[in-house]
Length: 287
Length: 155
Ligand SMILES: Cc1cc2nc3c(=O)[nH]c(=O)nc-3n(C[C@H](O)[C@H](O)[C@H](O)COP(=O)(O)OP(=O)(O)OC[C@H]3O[C@@H](n4cnc5c(N)ncnc54)[C@H](O)[C@@H]3O)c2cc1C
Image (tube, rainbow over all chains, first blue to last red; front, side, top):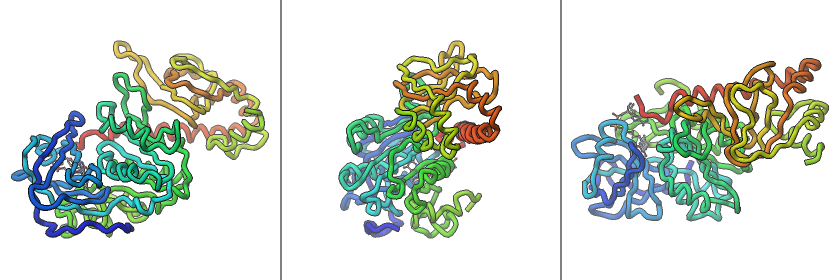
């Protein structure tokens, strides 16, 4: 599915120690950690890949890399507090040490998308796994057609990376006056001056060349199902629709079967999968 | 835009696409282009439904007033959206206000004329009902999905 070689993982089961170099509180329950390798080379990765982050004495969880692939010396993750391990990660202070395995998994098909319009759709904590792809598009802007980032969050207070969103409005643009970044919230609050409604409502007005468009999406699976339906209505071929399936996983190397989705192990074959690979499995229960 | 241009524009729009040429011509004749400024109301809560609208450019907020809380925003509608499905039901009153939030260009269609034509020509009426049903279905689906609070904390 993807043509770029994945970086070699020496011992995929053994965590490497990384030190927390910077902690950024993004929202009430989301934190970005910048990590530096304590020994050995920085960890090179492809946009869309994830690592297993190990908080000693608490546990290990898969987290997508949210940083710039051209700046691997800082390994960046954006984490939402939902349970024991993510809470421990969000409470880490500068100087703390965590274990890192990876990078693992498939990546966004940015090579195949060259020359195409690119539509990225993120819901909630789905923006961080797309951010490395955004950086890639910015570094190689001339290789792509129109680029759109559609982002849905719960409330304006839950929006991640607000300053970058403003910058991307200009830097991702393909023409003066274009609005490549389109944001909507489920519930307006305060002085919110943007759209209110589902992220899927942002798809119909886009100016795209459907047969030459690649769509990348991350978010709750229900959101992605409806996003796919809207993108199909616009005439984008199924094989150009890619999702990051963030089903929970344990081993990250295709041993344990915890993240199985039909014939696929999300950790080994995913998290980035083309829609035809998962179409028959997305709506089934417990597969 | 000329009448012929407007007919073509309507036929390109998913809501009107596929209507008979004579219906498109009639709708193009009926359409009233409007330009609204920020803060203008297209309609207010409690008013009778007079028109339905095709938004061409801009952003419109659907709001409801809650005493003590001010105007709560239910949803926004923007370019390409059709607003005002309740016109198909005679004597309905608006349950929300529609306030212009970004300078908006739109086409307004007089509800009484549309209903009268639908009564006389059931083919036209049925085609319109199908199209408004789709709009209602999409709104209902969006509302249900928002009720799920998909981005909320997992329980
Ligand atoms: C490939 C991949 C990439 C991911 N990237 C990120 C990321 O960039 N940032 C981030 O914050 N999280 C990400 N996640 C999700 C993260 O791994 C989980 O939130 C974490 O494992 C929860 O562990 P916990 O011990 O904190 O909570 P737990 O106690 O394990 O779970 C707390 C609650 O969260 C639910 N939950 C746990 N995992 C998931 C999941 N994967 N999807 C939906 N609900 C879940 C549980 O059902 C439970 O209700 C990713 C997951 C995968 C598989």
